[in-house]
Amino acid sequence: MYFKRISWLAVLLLLSGGAVAKDISGEYAVHGVGGEPCSLFLEARAEGGGRLLEYEIWLSGYFSAFNLIVSNTYSIMGARNMGHFLEALDQYCSQYPGELLITAISSITMTVFPERHNLSPHVERWPKILND
Picture 1 (spheres, rainbow, N blue to C red):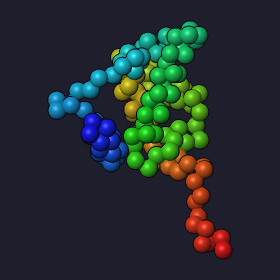
Picture 2: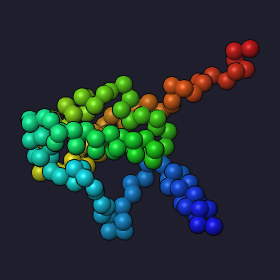
Picture 3: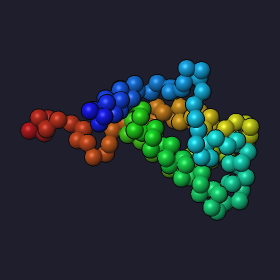
Picture 4: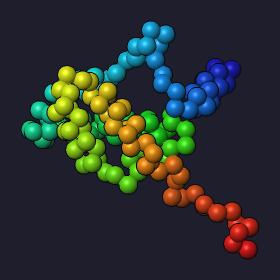
Protein backbone atom coordinates (compact mmCIF):
# COMPACT_ATOMS: atom_id res chain seq x y z
CA MET A 1 0.00 0.00 0.00
CA TYR A 2 2.82 2.43 0.91
CA PHE A 3 4.57 1.71 -2.41
CA LYS A 4 1.36 2.50 -4.33
CA ARG A 5 1.06 5.88 -2.61
CA ILE A 6 4.67 6.75 -3.39
CA SER A 7 4.18 5.62 -7.00
CA TRP A 8 1.12 7.83 -7.39
CA LEU A 9 2.96 10.74 -5.85
CA ALA A 10 5.82 10.26 -8.32
CA VAL A 11 3.36 10.14 -11.24
CA LEU A 12 1.66 13.34 -10.06
CA LEU A 13 5.01 15.10 -9.75
CA LEU A 14 6.03 14.05 -13.26
CA LEU A 15 2.68 15.11 -14.71
CA SER A 16 3.02 18.55 -13.17
CA GLY A 17 5.51 19.35 -15.93
CA GLY A 18 7.48 22.54 -15.64
CA ALA A 19 5.54 23.99 -12.74
CA VAL A 20 7.65 25.90 -10.26
CA ALA A 21 7.65 23.88 -7.06
CA LYS A 22 7.71 26.00 -3.91
CA ASP A 23 5.86 25.92 -0.62
CA ILE A 24 2.77 27.98 0.05
CA SER A 25 4.87 31.01 1.00
CA GLY A 26 7.05 30.77 -2.13
CA GLU A 27 10.05 29.31 -0.30
CA TYR A 28 12.08 26.21 -1.14
CA ALA A 29 15.12 24.45 0.29
CA VAL A 30 18.42 24.49 -1.57
CA HIS A 31 21.07 21.97 -0.62
CA GLY A 32 24.80 22.12 -1.24
CA VAL A 33 26.65 24.85 -3.09
CA GLY A 34 23.48 25.92 -4.92
CA GLY A 35 22.55 27.86 -1.81
CA GLU A 36 25.79 29.85 -1.85
CA PRO A 37 26.16 33.32 -3.38
CA CYS A 38 27.62 33.72 -6.85
CA SER A 39 30.65 35.45 -5.37
CA LEU A 40 31.80 32.15 -3.85
CA PHE A 41 31.35 30.42 -7.21
CA LEU A 42 33.57 33.06 -8.82
CA GLU A 43 36.23 32.46 -6.15
CA ALA A 44 36.08 28.71 -6.79
CA ARG A 45 36.37 29.33 -10.54
CA ALA A 46 39.48 31.42 -10.00
CA GLU A 47 41.06 28.82 -7.71
CA GLY A 48 39.99 25.70 -9.61
CA GLY A 49 40.62 22.35 -7.99
CA GLY A 50 38.38 20.54 -5.55
CA ARG A 51 36.15 23.45 -4.66
CA LEU A 52 35.27 24.00 -8.31
CA LEU A 53 34.60 20.27 -8.65
CA GLU A 54 31.94 20.62 -5.92
CA TYR A 55 30.13 23.14 -8.11
CA GLU A 56 30.43 20.95 -11.20
CA ILE A 57 29.05 17.94 -9.32
CA TRP A 58 26.17 20.02 -7.95
CA LEU A 59 25.40 21.35 -11.43
CA SER A 60 25.40 17.80 -12.84
CA GLY A 61 22.79 16.86 -10.23
CA TYR A 62 20.76 19.96 -11.03
CA PHE A 63 20.75 19.15 -14.76
CA SER A 64 19.84 15.51 -14.11
CA ALA A 65 16.94 16.51 -11.84
CA PHE A 66 15.79 19.11 -14.39
CA ASN A 67 15.78 16.44 -17.11
CA LEU A 68 13.76 14.08 -14.92
CA ILE A 69 11.19 16.56 -13.69
CA VAL A 70 10.57 18.89 -16.64
CA SER A 71 8.25 17.48 -19.29
CA ASN A 72 9.46 16.99 -22.85
CA THR A 73 13.11 17.30 -21.84
CA TYR A 74 15.79 14.70 -22.47
CA SER A 75 18.75 17.03 -21.83
CA ILE A 76 18.59 20.67 -20.82
CA MET A 77 22.25 20.92 -21.84
CA GLY A 78 21.34 20.27 -25.46
CA ALA A 79 24.51 20.53 -27.56
CA ARG A 80 26.30 22.39 -24.77
CA ASN A 81 28.82 20.96 -22.32
CA MET A 82 29.64 21.87 -18.73
CA GLY A 83 32.18 24.45 -19.90
CA HIS A 84 29.45 26.44 -21.64
CA PHE A 85 27.40 26.59 -18.46
CA LEU A 86 30.40 27.52 -16.33
CA GLU A 87 31.14 30.42 -18.68
CA ALA A 88 27.50 31.52 -18.57
CA LEU A 89 27.66 31.39 -14.77
CA ASP A 90 30.86 33.47 -14.87
CA GLN A 91 29.00 36.18 -16.78
CA TYR A 92 25.83 36.05 -14.68
CA CYS A 93 27.68 35.91 -11.36
CA SER A 94 29.98 38.77 -12.33
CA GLN A 95 26.87 40.91 -12.83
CA TYR A 96 25.03 39.64 -9.74
CA PRO A 97 27.60 38.43 -7.17
CA GLY A 98 25.05 38.47 -4.33
CA GLU A 99 22.56 36.16 -6.10
CA LEU A 100 22.42 32.52 -5.10
CA LEU A 101 23.88 30.01 -7.52
CA ILE A 102 20.45 28.32 -7.83
CA THR A 103 18.99 31.63 -9.03
CA ALA A 104 21.79 32.05 -11.56
CA ILE A 105 21.56 28.56 -13.04
CA SER A 106 17.75 28.70 -13.06
CA SER A 107 17.91 31.86 -15.14
CA ILE A 108 20.45 30.32 -17.50
CA THR A 109 18.49 27.08 -17.97
CA MET A 110 15.34 29.04 -18.79
CA THR A 111 17.29 30.98 -21.40
CA VAL A 112 18.63 27.81 -23.08
CA PHE A 113 15.39 25.84 -22.62
CA PRO A 114 14.22 26.24 -26.26
CA GLU A 115 17.51 24.66 -27.41
CA ARG A 116 17.29 21.62 -25.11
CA HIS A 117 17.21 18.11 -26.52
CA ASN A 118 13.67 16.93 -26.00
CA LEU A 119 14.09 13.41 -27.38
CA SER A 120 16.60 10.73 -26.57
CA PRO A 121 18.95 9.86 -29.42
CA HIS A 122 17.99 6.23 -28.75
CA VAL A 123 14.34 6.77 -29.62
CA GLU A 124 13.27 5.91 -33.14
CA ARG A 125 11.97 9.17 -34.53
CA TRP A 126 9.88 7.83 -37.38
CA PRO A 127 7.33 5.03 -37.15
CA LYS A 128 8.34 1.77 -38.80
CA ILE A 129 5.39 2.05 -41.17
CA LEU A 130 7.20 4.90 -42.96
CA ASN A 131 10.18 2.62 -43.60
CA ASP A 132 8.09 -0.15 -45.19
